[in-house]
Image (cartoon, rainbow, N blue to C red; front, side, top):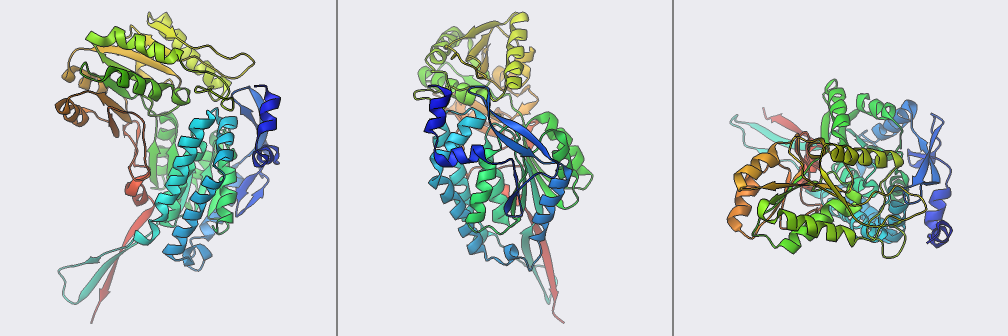
Length: 498
């Protein structure tokens, strides 16, 4: 399908978003960036510019934080809302995502390189579900009565919003991360400053407008796409931001943690991964290969929890490699708006060169590089599904996060050995076990040091289930009740009676 045909097929609301003047969203309305900076938004499937986004500078971050902070005043409209009404607003935001589901899916394709069907079924669906899940929480946040040992004294606890929540997110899940970050903060009563990636800003900006239409008071949700470290550093060091939530690389996560420490801010970090995925010889081999291939090749491997280290029992190693290549070769590669496509591009030319560099160095180090699939002509940042065998645990491609459609396959001999090798990583975001043995499942799920362990499957999330990592994959949790705790302070109130 040509670029012209694709453009003609876009929904009018998507076309209007692409044509909109570069803007931020602060204090309930679109506004120009005080920085005067802009950046092109590139369609990864064609390599061409489709829109222009405003890029926030320090003064814009200051304005957004000031707008958010006004909503912490006890007399503000936001603080005066009942828990029930706050939940209703969150519910309306979730329903607005559903109403515009097809249009949001198109935006995820156009600035993030998604495949439309997957974007609709996964990114959009789970963003909406997350808002609806947290819509039920405002009326469930309450304190307790504490039976202290002092006579004549009544003690109770109250739970209050921690303050302005600053959020910095990666480019790989623009809309999904809006749900993961915004919904629990708003449920807890925290106003939000959301620094969207300048590479994929379109859905977050539109969602902020829909949230205002759903009844969110001005300034409660501010979206400020930004380029480079400066706007993020301003948000991290701002004295009126009391909570930071970040999804992105471990390198940047360390910088945020150091900066937040100066003002003793609450921090949640969801960082990189090099997730171990283990296939035992008693597994359903076809299901294990299909699930492993789906996990690493979905969104062209640009997921932090992708099962990029595949440990396979030595007796079935070669068979698994062959089956993986068959799965990879069956993928239809192309632009995410085209019919029948199930594998799209990497997000940018920079990311393409990064992934290519890892694979070329692996080949130079003696690894066996296998690639499958036919890349489309006509531009775009496409990289083929890649299986690398003949590697050792100390090689760069095994140790470092590639963030592309690349899986390294390593043989193992027994459970104790593979558990030790799987845990010998800087990361601990996710892990997987494929086995027909209940005993092996229990042993391995206990042994693996990871925030999420999948057994005979891969990659599902749910708003009710916490998600996060061990070690240098971060700390704190998104989703579930655990996420709410990061946005709430507990206050003890002592009342003396005569």
